[in-house]
Image 1: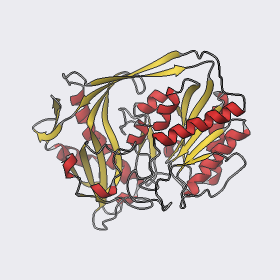
Image 2 (image 1 turned 120 degrees about the vertical axis):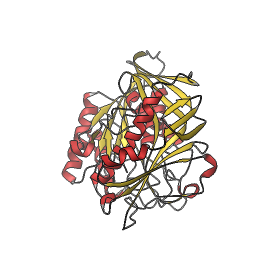
Image 3 (image 1 turned 90 degrees about the horizontal axis):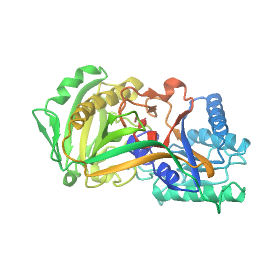
Image 4 (image 1 turned 60 degrees about the horizontal axis):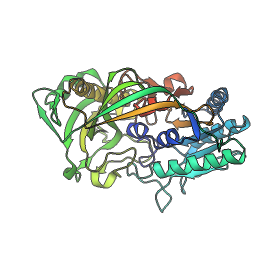
Length: 414
């Protein structure tokens, strides 16, 4: 799960991004976008990407920023550098990071003055429980309040004026509840039941040579006391009915979450970075977090057996995500043909508030490859096929809209 299981922002976490939701809902702020900045390997690259991130923020003429990271240790150099480069350009920021005892800053500067620590463990040390130290809605509320306080002290918070609003983008999300999942003759969705073709794993296994076997299981809410291998990701199952990521219509299956896990043959290595997350589900997953399933969700479990050594390679991890996305794509094709009426419809707007304080969110995400990697702009919401890996772009900062974030524009690998 990235650098550590308990802090990692899964694909599901980005889809549910608490900071994005808080910023877009604050009418005193003009939330003008999100910069996705990948963690770099070398120090020169860390400085370079931090400078480019701050240059973009300066060009966007923002008044303030929230900078969030889910890694720690040397990755905090990227975090501190971004905050410094923003500060040099006169842009105040609020940082959000796992700190506790284990993730203390390895460096600092005069601009690192406001950090929200989203450690949730009394010990101050990261656990191997997925989502145990997830950045949550309360953390996001504190960050927005602190940023507004900073802006107010600097005379940059517009008060006592009527804030104008202009809607520039619309995303419609139609929610289709799933009450049951079963295997059958073909993949389809009808009357709240998702049927998955029983031989689906056999059809896709030959696509990726690093993968020896793929097993697909259905785990009901009362079946969580069972052993699983180390987690590679959690993601929702969603598809585009029309438009591109961030606009048009997206269909989402509610009540179900896809879970990817894996293990190597022969060695038995559990793919991980610092601490693998294998174990009994009811012990190794903190449910009901932004990046984890709700406790009453049905889990579509896709488990991979990597060929020996491939669970430690970039090609192996990417292959697993590619294969999982092929499975989900068959489900998405069935979603396009759903005749049931949606249970609920959510509408998200990208809003411009021209006379409000301009702010942005900087997401510092995994960008090292293999054990710590992120991709952006997949073909389908939260998917992987078609996405661009940040490491392949040398982690040059990418700007996305709030709607693109909430429409699955960021895919987190292990």
